[in-house]
Image 1 (cartoon, rainbow, N blue to C red):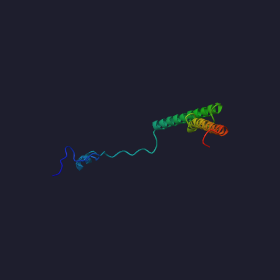
Image 2: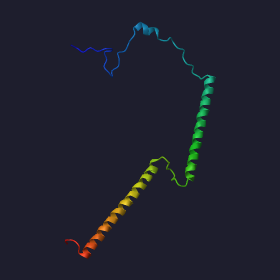
Image 3: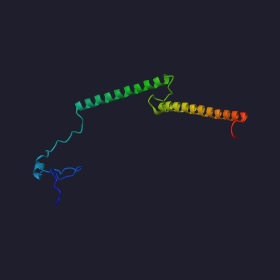
Image 4: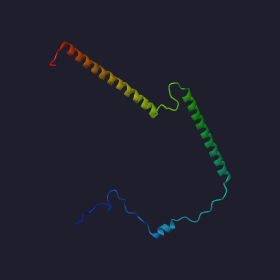
Length: 133
């Protein structure tokens, strides 16, 4: 015996079957013939286009001025390299490499002091004759 499904006959993740109307219902909903568009623009459309173009040109000019101010400010700054932004990867990498360099210096210092200590201990053992050798 087949398992019965409550509600719809579709499985999860599947679309429900489309509800299609009859051909008569579709034919009445179609719009009538439309008037063709004129070949030229109306004076209102031309004025709106001119206003939009003026606004776009003004926005581009202000963006270019802001970019120019940013460039001159970056040139004037003393501590920052030219072309390196505060949030860029190069700045984060330089900070990260500073930690790495400091850690390597500490490792070399501790390792060198341990080697020097072992050599000093070996000299003391050889001079005093302590040990089985």
